[in-house]
Image (cartoon, rainbow, N blue to C red; front, top):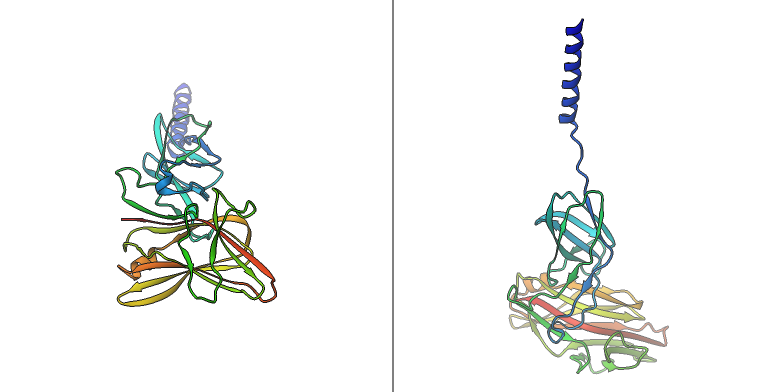
Length: 289
């Protein structure tokens, strides 16, 4: 009887050990809380405004991806001991929530921490524009309307974009661009006086801040193989609040290789509307060389 009891105890012990092997205890993550991010100025003469619309963070732990997270985010990290997060800024590509992507022109934020299972560690990623060191060669072409205005009217009977320093119009700085419609003036096509050479098969984006009473369109006029090609890029809805957008130019620079690009802002006023205003700031073309 005693031997049977010992055997039964051994069987129970083996069973419990087997359960531990089959159902091992789950690891408890350390949580990294990211409520907001910052975009820091490093050389504003080159990269311009640091106003941003970073909506997500793409998080890596020791260079292995954990995934994209919408802000504010609580990121679970199965970590042991000391480790490092690599955090990339995420945006709405072309202003669309369904096309979230990493923005290639913001540098990676790194954050070292020691694992603390079940604990919450707060971190605010700090991003900068790339290309201000030796790690990447980036061109920044900027119109912030502080010193001038590269937009001219395309057709003589159109209204044009002017500079304004009116307090009610400004976004940041002392000046912004303005298209104003009144009475019989109801069309505008404002084109950059500068043509941009954007290398193919490399990341290229347009950044823009805007506020407008009526919809508008951004298009491009491309000098390509001896011809002028006009192509629409993106349409924008009216908004009574200043908005920032990131517009991908990759498809155009790849399709029209070695072409030179001028950019056009196209808008019109409905005949039923007496007046309409469109405001713009921080127009940027950014690309890897």
